Length: 328
Image (cartoon, rainbow, N blue to C red):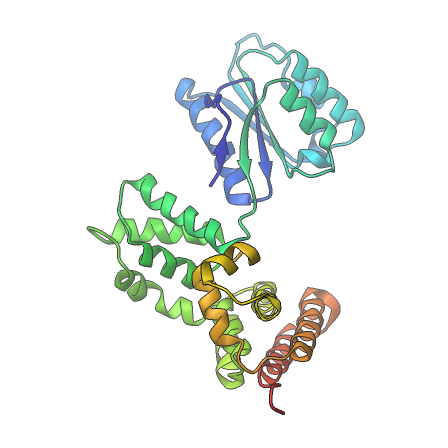
């Protein structure tokens, strides 16, 4: 979930949204626009990409108006602005106009860091929108979504929803909205199961789980179902990579309690238990073969091959065989 700086007034002169999570970046913009239009229903909103913000454009947009209208100027991917436009933005930050809110969306990182530093130095309100790569982060996001609606959901229900939907925050947020609208009382695991069992079976993570368990036929069935229901091939290769890497990490780690291994490997304890069950039959050579298969599939689905579906099927079969490499 987006984290805000101490200055939480969305109508301050400059808001800086930093990160690569598109849903959170969009919400940061929506919050500012909603606040501006609550203050003035006729607020003019300009949403610009780097190529639309040429040198001199910001000065035109922020010049004094005879009607003193409120305006929100949104600049997306600010890290990609040209050097001359960055100079314009820095100059504006030193003397922002009244009745105008500038929203800078920046991916963070090294590229465009001078602009990022200048905005922070100018006292911009900052909203952190980090990419949620860890299952624990997505679980916390789902819990916060339920809390924001004033509804209760059990921990098991939240985990089941993350397992069913996967890593797409927009779909997780949409699922929470649907459950809250359709279900009365506390939302539990059974409710999530009724709504999303089909989706869970078709998810990229189901494909990966069956593959690393050596269950090739079931993995292929889940793969074909996933593709038929619109799951992006790149999401499947990502899940396969995560599954194989988890096997490799845990197999090379020292023994210990799930909680200790979770801290060491950056996995939640429940994931440690699951991977321990999946790693039977794996060898170091098998992990290496599987990682190579994933790399080839990733290249195949990103334009390196003519048939992404075949590339995925080939990877799933190779991973399932690698999962049974011990004892050959």
